Length: 232
Image 1 (cartoon, helix red, strand yellow):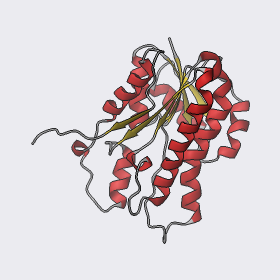
Image 2 (image 1 turned 60 degrees about the vertical axis):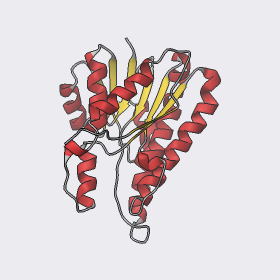
Image 3 (image 1 turned 30 degrees about the vertical axis):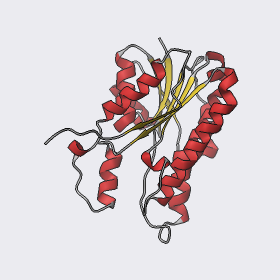
Image 4 (image 1 turned 180 degrees about the vertical axis):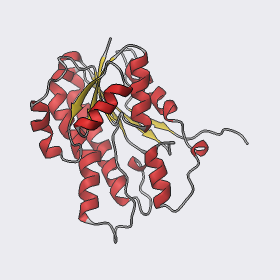
């Protein structure tokens, strides 16, 4: 039984990944933004542990984790939580920039730093759910794309640094996926949301499990997932 620490398990891709891992009997430690949310996650994922921390405030993560019990062993750290607020560079405020970078980039870096000792001992795996925006930047996506480009750099650097310690690092770049975040994005774009047009979160979850379950003689560094043709 492997032990996984997961951010973003409350919805979308994170929920799909957590469900798949729980169904096969693995141990889950799920991040929640407050005690109420932690109670909801514990009810949704019976047997899972919860950790309370505000991912929008990376400066407080060390303090928050220092006041909670942590797993003795961590086989994987899955960075799935994220935020997306669209707008032109000439319109975005520092508040949007700071929040986007905090949640999407600085918090994954800080959580990795704090949990790296356990990951080194177990020769564990760090998975970053990135985005197609981590490979290219389109108009109105400046802040989000910048955070995801930074996340790619973080993953690449971590992979080089921790290779000799046996820690594997994978970045997954999903295209548009049928999640609550995508619904919010479509509203910001002034477009209709049609879940049938996008990738099912379970399909992205399948790619995450593929990376986690790969034999130790190999690792998946970067994996792009795009919407497929469904006919019609």
